[in-house]
Structures are given as structure tokens and as C-alpha cells.
Amino acid sequence: MPRPTQFEQQDATDQIFAIKTWRYLRASMIGFVLAIFIGVGFERSKAPGCFQTSISAYYYTPVHGVFIGALVAVGTCLICLRGNTDAEDILLNLAGMFAPVVALVPTPGTGSCGSVLTTADNRDVNIGNNMFVLLAVGAAGFVFLAVIAIVGRVRHGSWPPRLKPRSPSPGSASINSRSTSISATVCTRPQARRARPVTDRFGSAT
Image (cartoon, rainbow, N blue to C red):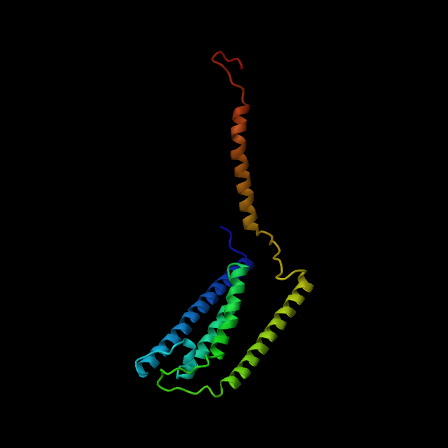
């Protein structure tokens, strides 16, 4: 059996790394969401037997840091993941863009159920600063992607670049030639049998 070439081994290694990366991203999102639930549950054990009216209201409780960090991390993971189709990929990117907005733009009301509640006095100032940073980073990301797309089109003529078919290795070429000769032999045998003259019992051709 022919040994795989260096390029084939590299392709297999890259596929393994890609699968592991996607797996870790999905597992990370589960961990971040679990962190929010654990934080809310721990706060619930210290609060006077009630929950906040919305998940966004936990912005004003001790869950503040975990709430913001987990949602921003989940949004980053959603943007990094590639959907199976273009429509799915667009939806994942939109979800990743809005997840930090949910974290950085809390509800106006602080709620009344929490072990310690902060005020909403600085809410507008915080939103202004946070959203400016978020939009600036998003604009920088779009510019970066546009530059990559333009450079890719200039170098390759299209973006993403089209992969050129790789020439088969000598081992695969020999296997293909063998399979072709075998299939040709199998296909021609019935024709050769039909081409033989049929003789009767007296030996004369019919």
C-alpha cells in the first residue's frame, strides 16, 4: 500500500486541528453559558428568595463581571464558528455581534431582587463608552476583512482562493491504472464471448 505524501499528511493534520478547534469553541460556549447559570444560582441563594425580572437586570448584581465576560466570550465564539451554509454563517455572525450588546446595554431598571444592587446613575455614561468601543472594534474588523478580500482577489483572482487540483501521487496513479485495466478487462469479456461463433452439434457455424 503506498505511503501518503507529505502534502496529504499535512492536509490530514490540518483537518484534525480544525476539528479540535471547532470542538473547543463549542465546548467553551457551553462553559460560558454554564458560568452565567452558576453565577445567577449562587446569587439566588443569597438573595431574598427571588429572581430578577430579566437576565439583563443581573448587570446590577454581583453577577455583573461573569455576566458581561461570558456574553462577550460567547459572541466571539459565535463569530469564529463557520456555519454549514452561507445563511447559517450570517446568522451566527449576527448572533455574535448582538451578544456583547446584551451584555453592555443593561435594562433601565435595576430590579429589586439581589444581595447587593448597584444604581443605574452611570448607566448612560457606561453604555456610551462601551458601545463606542464595540463599534470601533467592529469597524476595524470589517476593514481588516475587506483588505484581506482585496489582496486575495489581486493575488488569486477570487476570494476565497480556489484550490487547484493536486496531481496524484505515484502510488495512487498505479492504483488507478490497475483499476482501469481491471474494469476494461471485465467489460470486454462478455463482448468477446458474444463474438464467438455458435456451432451446432454437427460442427457447422450458425
